Image (tube, rainbow, N blue to C red; front, top):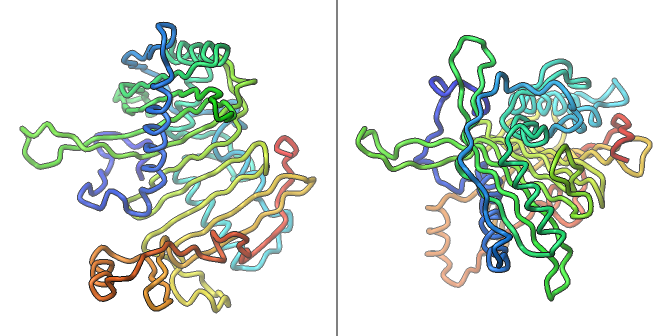
Length: 379
């Protein structure tokens, strides 16, 4: 588990694995979005008023556990909304619901029953709470700077890669320290007439020497968890919690599995949670003939609106990524060597991404649909 284990005992990922393995893609994509957005904004952030006020932050905190304002955490809405209204569900659906609950618990370390969590203890909810509670003046300054930029419609960015949060949940005097990148970015109205917005990116990362040589000081950074949040400018404030437009947050549970939540607060008013396992797993007792292969992706979409009931769709896929092959076949999860061989055998072949029509196509058909629990605050 990669979230909040002690630094002295936390297992490190195999950094020799491919950087762009499917499980890492969400976290890597979040990082690329930050760099892209920042580079565009910096060209417009002219003038002495807009500067990056980031300074090194080292906060010693007594606990990493969130026990209040749980509705502001990443998974609280979903955990409550995706609970079946009907206790008598088919075994396949029940097994998938239990699987997702276990993986969310692993990622967020929530306590209590899934339908009524009592606390969360993970790196993303921790830093969210610290920012919202104004525990670090430099973070509050960053938000004030975004407010100033919004009022004056000038591109502005706060980026801080030197944030360390320490805590001692065990009470044994041994601090655990988490490293973060925190980035606020205001994109103003341009000549193209785009809608202005503020994005905020949080990345909790670690580092390891590239070799066993103790004299090698070169570090490779990896993400354990990350989120990117978009805020409407008319409700952005320099203090407290804010209701976002959208959120994407992802946790790397291991080198081969991840959990990602995508939250839409405006247009669709829904949460989508995806669990990915590169090795795949079997759906015990399944009569779905489509899944002769192991399942590698599971996605739950909880639709809170128009209400009053929550509708939950479950989508399944037996691959993480695929290409349309040279002879019309589907090439699922190809390795680098397999791609080289295909290109050698078919030099005129143009590789095109294949989307699973039952998972991420234009109008995918869910494998299961059931009635969830009403969640009025998201309707």
